Image (cartoon, rainbow, N blue to C red; front, side):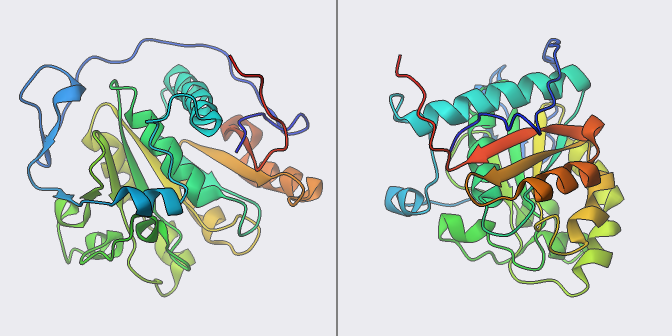
Length: 267
């Protein structure tokens, strides 16, 4: 994984503003101390994920500080967070032109590293309603999911899971959802609620491939920006250009070049 942007697709956004100090933790999180480092979960389901499951799924927890992949995600995390703060953005669609280019794993690992800043919490929402898979990365089958939430069949807290990582939660989707495109297009109020629920939370939505169906296109107007994940040696230049056109250059958070052959110098 590399955070090196594609030269023909890069859109730099300079600027950095301060991080808000107020934190509203709501019903599902309680903070006995004064900082985000003290968050405890009172209603969110906390699951115990064996380290072997995380390793097999290529989830990068950041424990190995000398790991080049860990460092790459830290660089990506910092770049993303600076741009989000500069634009007052909090909802991010994570998309790729086609299937199999690493968008889901990128969303999860980016969320984990955003949460590790201790200034923000992160929520990854599985919005790939044709082929939901986020929960599988944690070896977990949810009892309730995001679709249950949307239909009012369970509370938000009942569907959330915390995989034992501080300040990080997942809102899974258990199985494919019928009429996914139409359903996703109607989630405006739900997305707004997720965005406004916690003052320092970044919400990442794992979406279907942008060029495969109209699902992602239906959902993109509901979020602040989009992160485009492409794979070196696989993603076609024309597909990247078309994806940026659909996202809109002004709302493109950046690009992630996955499986890059470039190896950064060690420090």
